Image (cartoon, rainbow, N blue to C red; front, side):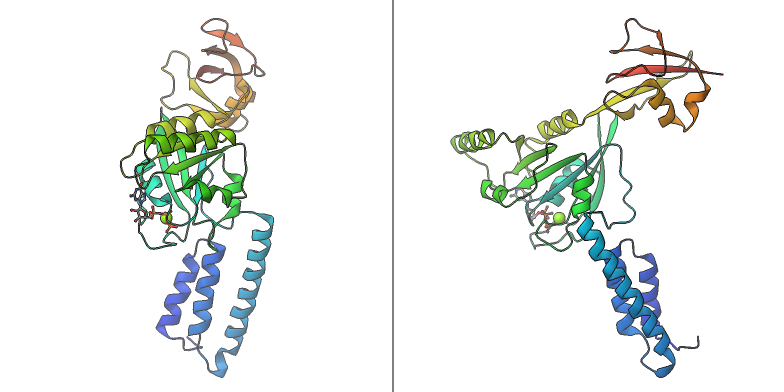
Length: 298
Ligand SMILES: Nc1nc2c(ncn2[C@@H]2O[C@H](COP(=O)(O)OP(=O)(O)OP(=O)(O)O)[C@@H](O)[C@H]2O)c(=O)[nH]1
Ligand SMILES: [Mg+2]
């Protein structure tokens, strides 16, 4: 090793190579720079690292401005819900109630520094939930919120809501009851939410009250349909395919496999969009939630 680097530097280099987001890369690169050898022979190395750091920092500014997600490695699911809120509103608690994710839950502030991803299964479909780090922190990922199908805004009191600039038609206000709210108080809050035409639900991540109602609301809000597929003389698929509303038969085939629609010889359907069970339809036939589609290929 010509530059004679310290083992700490090599360890930092390894961490850098494993960094999964731009922010993370910058952090690790800074560490590498601080641990890089200071002798003359390593001048080139130090210069290279600094140039790289500058490049990443510029990329980050650009990404933040454009509102694109800077997180690598989160593959967007068909149904994606992002939880946002101020620190200590119970975002990590909520994602651990709803999904298989086990993030750290703590009364110390800004505990979650990177998005947490979890999967929730509801009526045989999988929903991807993500906890976005606290909205008032530098780790908050705006791009993630922008690309979500549904945004859950988690609050502990009504006043918190005033601080949110985000207003999307696909948001649900989730009021986390840290202390049980008396019924008369709840009625007052409910009318406040209703005046503002908010879609809202009261929950508690501790007692799990309201969690079923929240799941139902999430599910209803997706502008998607579930379509089962089957092969002739076989049972329908155990899991439905998720498609946007008004998708047609051709789009189902393409979702199974790109180019598959060209091989389809005949299609039969069962369910809400069919006139009768086993109706033969063309590729342009628009489907409805819970239809079953059977493809016969050439
Ligand atoms: N009493 C009560 N405490 C709760 C409830 N939900 C969360 N907490 C507590 O509130 C604190 C913060 O919870 P977290 O789930 O870590 O909050 P967070 O929004 O993820 O916080 P950061 O990621 O640090 O921004 C923890 O001490 C939780 O135990 C609730 O419904 N009732
Ligand atoms: Mg958290």
